[in-house]
Length: 178
Figure (cartoon, rainbow, N blue to C red):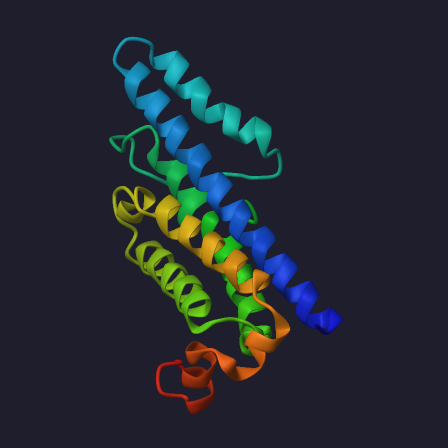
């Protein structure tokens, strides 16, 4: 394996792992804030402010209505804001860039999973929903990306050279998007 391929696969995995961890952090914080919001408003706000303490250079970038849910600015900033280096969107974009750089070393399934997940998050960011609907599905998709990426890294070089059916499909161009 070439060092540039190893480097890109390594960083692709790191960015996927970061996206998964941030998504889990958002889900746990949202659950805590939702459960405590009715009887302890300050505790709910503290839960969200703790995320800003964990990620000090992150900031809430989009203005929201005063009637919006408490979690909305935080979910927008950490889920769909492509300019925030701590957002899921940013991490998936970087993972996708690394995957595109070494597409020949990945299975079609890995590349398609990363690409579809990135496109789904990007679409939600462009629509600016009241609450990102894909926030509840992202951990599963991100976990699927991580698992299939790990399987791809574990394959032997002989398999990667063309003996598997997925690499045969990839070389024929029948299922791989261009």
